[in-house]
Image 1 (cartoon, rainbow, N blue to C red):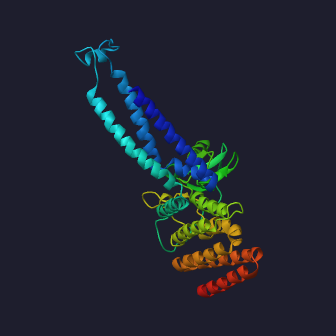
Image 2 (image 1 turned 180 degrees about the horizontal axis):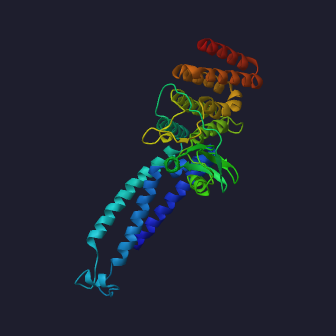
Image 3 (image 1 turned 120 degrees about the vertical axis):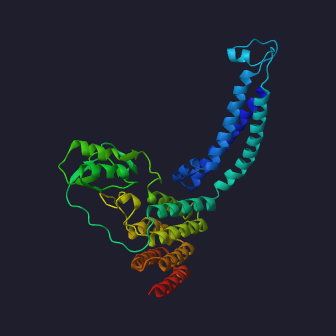
Length: 376
């Protein structure tokens, strides 16, 4: 049992070492933002939980095993058997089964870790998560108009510094309903605030300290951004991978192209959605009392393709792929938003004209002309 316990401890130490090495490699290569993705990976959590659970269970069984010349140390041990020596056979059988399961999990873990840090897998998970969150945040398709925001009101200032991680929309709606007022948010998830910065303002009643305090408590602040309610965080992850791949030290345009493809898929999804309405904006009676901040389609394009534009323009291959990706977006989104894609294509062409020269620039110019004709 002692040998088994030591071996279990060695296995756990090895697993943790492999995990730390993989996380260090991923954060150094792809960016520190991806640490959240690896810590939330269900495969890693299941593997570590299996090894730790088996190890702790084996140690607990060890306390119940005694030889014939040993004296029971507790009443439970004394009542466990009529003979002086005692071995929990059923518990040992269960521990053996858990050990076999742990061996299978170890084989899975050794295969899962290298696969999980492959860049294509990383990009796929980020892209699919981003698209899934877009569909959940903006479930409606079609056209829509933004509601007119109430004017004036009493501002609610932040009392401490940090990033807005979560906004309790249902709590804000309850406050607005209790006091018969309307609340206009002036910050959204992912924004950094500090004392005196206005989080929101409420309209419909005189300033009351109790209302301002309750509204302020609906904003959860932390020291880092998370993708829980922040779509821009996931877009920034894709942009960061593209920028790192196109940096002179790495010079990997193929990884950047894959990131651009997922950005294009997310942009097309946003282009088909109604971005001025979200399920959290209305109560059960479909009445709006809380007015969140919503980015428009041009803002999302700027956060994604606009942020990566300078690095993409320096690579002729990445520029051509970005043109094709934007063209595919324009063909699948609402017509009133195609002009945003046209402007982004023109900006990318202007940026490439200052970065490229010779045959590369001529090739990009020709492709730009073809795309303009296709979007005419």
